[in-house]
Image (cartoon, rainbow, N blue to C red; front, side):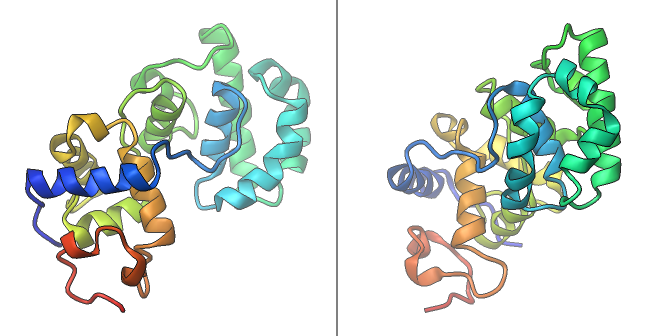
Length: 214
């Protein structure tokens, strides 16, 4: 685990991320808060590309909790059967749709506590929805962020929550809104698990990782 980088270095790192990608976007396709919530819930242990392939047809016919309930468990299962753990995920989506209708007037709530009370919605899923739809500077830590946070010293921590706190505590406030997207994309395409692409990394000279690749 690398040591936490100092403030000036953090500022420069995120200035470079911002210059390279001023408005980073998540890669899960969605049309509203509900479809985003469902897409993120379905993405656990699955790729964004795989989820998008399944949800294009699904969201064309069920883009609200009411329509999802009308589709039913069997209809939903058929739509998402190419996604890992699809049976349990289908049960969770139907249950959360029911709760949204009964307790939230069919609307996706904008608080972490309310979101995490829904079946199949953990802290990471809630943070993605809060960030991407409601504009809250919530930090959704996935395996990519956990890896590069500790490798680079941007946000080191022994567990996911510690890494989340490190982002909140140490990333300059002007970069908090997009921090998790910049980090996810950097981890997904540049600072990969095996043989990171240090030769094309925009923060190579600021990174303390000793085993840099050409």
